[in-house]
Image 1: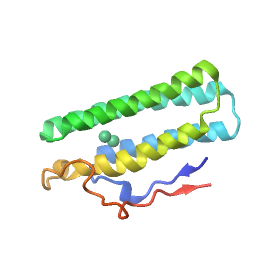
Image 2: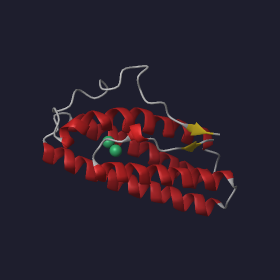
Image 3: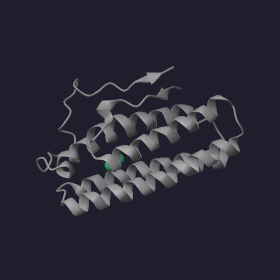
Image 4: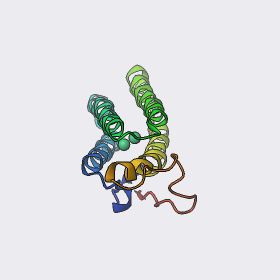
Amino acid sequence: MARIEWKAEYETGVALIDEQHRHLVEIINRFEEALQKGKGSRQANEILNDLTGYTQEHFATEERLLAEAGYPHLKLHQSQHRQLLQKVERFQFEYNAAGRRITAELHEFLGYWLVNHILRDDRAYAPCLTGGTSGGPEGTVAEPGHEPALTLQE
Ligand SMILES: [Fe+2]
Ligand SMILES: [Fe+2]
């Protein structure tokens, strides 16, 4: 398991969104810390609840801003949010149901969340919210090999 270090290139340039992304990373790091220190599952569970709640709040904010700005790929973005949320909820369910080790799956989720969503999909809408062009189709902003490296510290 590894801690996620926030980097400047993760930023979209939209202050409110960046603040929320940082907070999400902070919650994910707290959750991982609780798992690593072998703290009671109750604490890890509370943090996981925070993560689910804050993720819903963040998606609602993002979708509201994108709707107001007339973002052309809003529907696609919304469906990506739904899929991500389902994944978080599944972690929560499995953790509650069995208290089983979900470390590997959580790690996979973090990779998906950060690399594929915040860094690619969220950055794709940034020009639309910051007054640039309307933004290209999602997934076309960062070319393979040019994506900012995700820094994970062991
Ligand atoms: Fe986001
Ligand atoms: Fe998003």
